[in-house]
Image (cartoon, rainbow, N blue to C red; front, side, top):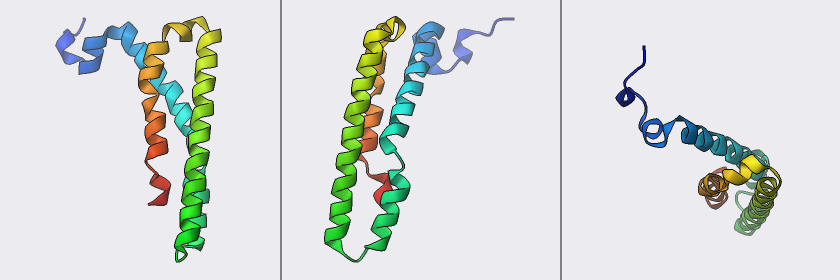
Length: 116
């Protein structure tokens, strides 16, 4: 028995199963890039800030260094994504979807959750 289309989630209905699968696959790839970008800064930088919490200059230096490292890793991740899309034909077909989901990585860089 087939379920009526109205019972499926909105994105699945709008994108249809083939496109929805590409979207979820792109989210998974970008999820790995988010993990690469965070690179354990949630633990190491937080611990460093906790040690020098009363020294504003030291906290600012740790913040700046961590943000620059996050940004550099995000740029390298973007280059890896483009290279993979260049060499893998299936990823080349999905490049617009991958580029549309890559702002998740940029958001991870711009929101310093580790500082809070």
